[in-house]
Length: 370
Ligand code: MN
Image (cartoon, rainbow, N blue to C red; front, top):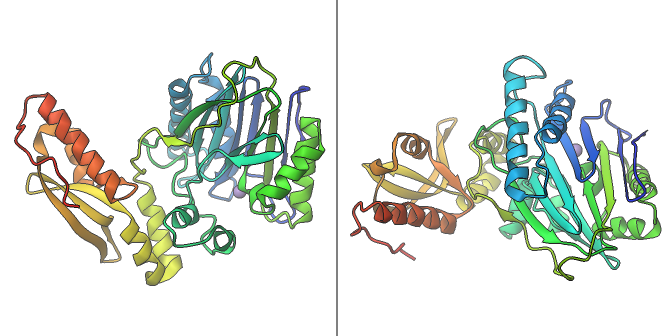
C-alpha cells in the first residue's frame, strides 16, 4: 500500500493488490486537478505509460476548469506516450487509461479514456459518470451482455480506447455542477472489478475523511481478492454552491470517431473470442469509407483480418468524397470508424452539409435509407 499526500478534502491511494508483481497504475492529486491512470502493456511498460500520462497531463493542465483545454492536455499525454514508445522509453504497444477531473468551485470537468472510472456520490447515492471504453461495456450497451455477465467475461479487460496508440485519439469530456457535500471518486478497474457500486457507495459513506475512505476502498478490494492494481482518489466538493443541484449530464463523446487503434484490439478480440461472438460484435460496428468517389457506409470493421472480412455494405451515398481533401480522403479510404450505423449517417450528413456550405453540389441526396 502506498499512501499519498492528501488534504482535508481529498485523498488517494494506489495499491499493488494481491496478485500482480508490479503496480502499473498511477494517480495525480494536484488540486484542482486529479487523475488516475491504469497502464497497459506489462513488462515495465504499463507503469511507464501511466506515470508519463499523469505527468504530462499535469504539465499541460489548463488554469481553469475548461473541458476543451483539459482534453488538449490529455491529447498531449497521448502524444507523449506514443513518442516514448517510439523512442524506446517503455515499449511499443504500451498504453494507459486516463480519467482526469478538474474542479472550479463546485464545477467539475472530466476528461476520460479507457476503463478507469469517475463516480459522483450525492446523498448516499453513487453514480458512475464516465462511460467505460471497453469491449464488454459496448456489448452491454448493445444488449449483448448483462452488466453481471460483463463482470465475468473473458474479454472484460479489453479496452477500446487508450492513450498510446492513435495520435487522433480523443477523450470523452463532460462537465457538471456538483453541490457541496458531493463526493467525487476516481478509480482504476482494480477497484470496480472487485467491488459492486453499492459496496463502494457504502464504504464511501462510512468514512468522512476522504483519505481514510480511499484506503478503506483499497482494503476492501484486496479483501475481495485484489486481482489487479487498485487506485482510488476521493475528493469532497466544498466549493461555492454555484448553480443548484443539477444532476451530472451524461458523458458526451467529444467526437464519436473510435480510434483506429481499435482495429488491433478488435483483432485480438477475434483471436480470443472466436468467430461466433466476433461476428455479433462486428455487426454492431460501422464505418464510413470512400468507393468510386463517393462516401459509403458499412456495418462491420474496415480492412480484413487473417483474410476474413467482417463488413456489410449499408448505404452507397451520392456524397462525393474528393472535395473533402487529401487528409480526410486518406482516412476515409482506411475506413473512419464510428459507434454505430446511425453515427455513420450523421457523419455523412456532416460532410454533406459542409459541401453544401462550400457551394459544392447541393443536389446530393440528404436522406439515409432507413
Ligand atoms: Mn487495471
